[in-house]
Length: 337
Image 1 (tube, helix red, strand yellow):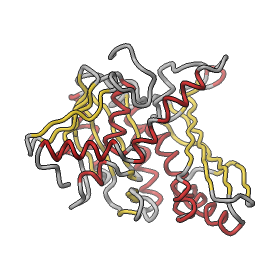
Image 2: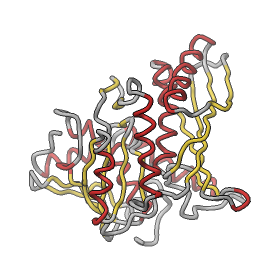
Image 3: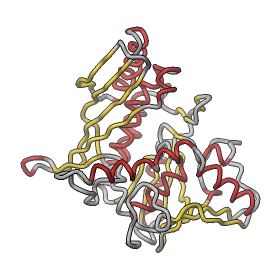
């Protein structure tokens, strides 16, 4: 990855990232959550809510572990222009959210609006392909083939024996990144696809790494790299955990020759950020590397509320975002920790 050569270029990179569509979309979350939390009878964030990759519910009747519920709406242009790929991704992104919380998916449900049956069938074909590849059943949903344009939302339920959350990184923890680089870009979108042509057995085994890490006590906090990209997801991670964070750009795994701004804003089909104690970091990284997944220590959590980008090779460092001064996805906080 071509890192910015100096501080001026680093500041320009930060401005580009903060103006990106995926980054800006995330800023809508706090307003929406604030509206819902004002409704009588709707509980506020209890540490397993706003900011996590899934909603978390206790298993009824005192059962073991946690029920997980994830839901994603797809970008309208993607559904209209690449319906099969959108359908596949609608399942994939939800399964990634479940895995990021230490869970295993149970079932998929979809809500699809399309102009006609032909367009709808392409979306459903992609959903079916992903469901077969990952071995998760499509349990039901909603379809409307008389809409003015294509729209798609998909939900997935899951179960976790031991949670990974967005709230449990601590100062002193290392920030680890794992990403499958065995793919290619899906032009013109910022999507890195390492899934649609991968063997089903490999896809399932790679997702299984996350719940195993949770159950083995090697990590307690993780996030799926989302539309906010690597930097934006790291910011959400730090904000939820009420910690500061430094990201070492030179250490980030990336495809050969990719521009740093393009990669930091990318949405990889398999990409995770994890927090781990320094003594356990290498063990976590080796779990991914053993399956051919690129993995590296790319920074560390620290006291405070600022997220900084650093290039040691260029001798440059700059602030990316301070969630204390400007909340990103959570309501204003009274202080770190």
